Image (cartoon, rainbow, N blue to C red; front, side):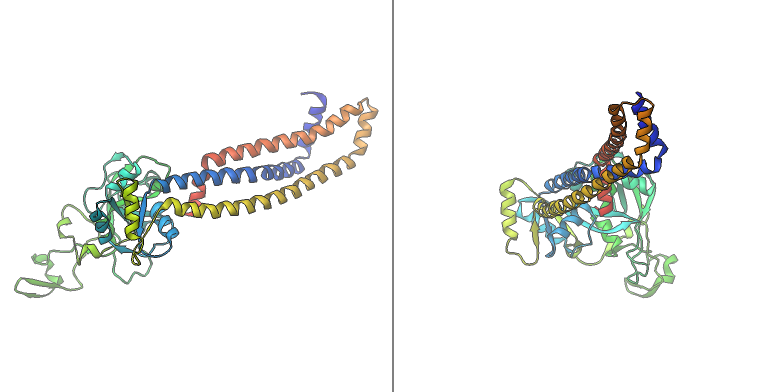
Length: 392
């Protein structure tokens, strides 16, 4: 390192706090516009890709955005439900394959997604260990959910109550983990997948209990009349489905009337998609939406906000640069005596100017390097962090 550069480095190292403040301020000013743009573009590409991979969504009347966010990203409030019969209605048209979704409950912070095996084919999800759920009460976990919950194949997860004071009598369900999915870098990594009937059991629409015809269940019998046995409040309800008690689990009512939050409709082709959308065009009880159009509208708003944020960042950046320039000018003015001393001991005017300029250049180079590193981190991990913060 040459003399002027060495002196500049030693000066910056000696005044480390002033140097640190300048470097931090300049790094952030350089990073914020570029990093924000990288983050928004990358997140929008991932959100758009998932929406484009979901042909059509059938849901109850309400906010299309809420329906899409809940069905694709499991991050919105639970939308108004529709009956499972709508899935049968989609299948009856012969135009599309229905995939019901019931996204309402959670295992701690991980969403429970009640669906059918067709969902895994649609998303291209594969099992890294174990197998997909085959019977009532089984679950398969996304890669991130398995890490967060710290469970593996053969262990159990328990659904979380929706509120502390659950007076409806819906018991948390203990579910056996039969498989772990391969990472997909999508919201599926965070989910706990179960059969839609298992989700209905969690909702209290199905249950299993003691066989009241057995002698050990006598305490739970309220009355007996011919072949009719009426139970009382002492009947033990199971909160885990095993091979021993699975036959006792049953549903009350018509399954066609049971709730789902949405139905993914996968048309056979573009013509079938247009015909199916036309059938729901005049419906007031059900809506059908194209997730890619909904996300395009939402991202249009995001890009508008991004422009305002970038304009604000530019103004703040100019103010910060002006402040940094003022700091350097005041520093040069304060160091007039130092420059005179360097001149007296033989320093040429050019060398002295190069020394002072080197200090500014070194600060800028370090700031650019830090801003570049932050941008690289944003490009690699920013979208995942953004989804986590947004709850998607």
